Image (cartoon, rainbow, N blue to C red; front, top):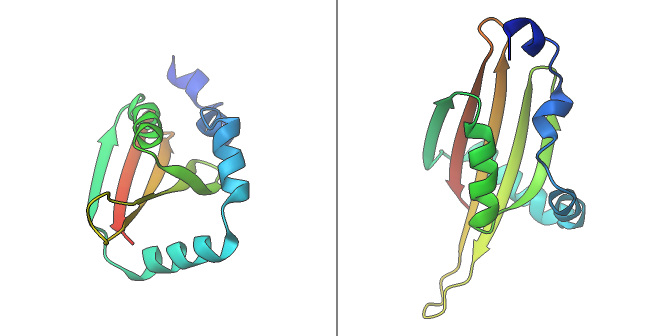
Length: 125
């Protein structure tokens, strides 16, 4: 895809890989729990942060999150970026301790050179 054609790309292009199931999960997720997770994410340190440059990392990240049992709980499309918050809870079989994780996916579209930048930030909630 040429740089000229990439400049016409919109936020809708960034969110096209979000499925109907993702959107249903987002709508059904309890608002109180979502607020709790977002509060934690905004006040706690990131456990892990990874940045990828290239056009296919966004797709791979979304597929991997779904495969690992994460569900979409928030999405904020912007003019040249899209931020999504994914969440999963793990109930272990042989332990009383439950683990919860939140992953923020930030897709930034770089107009100058046509490069997509995907950043994954993970928190243990």
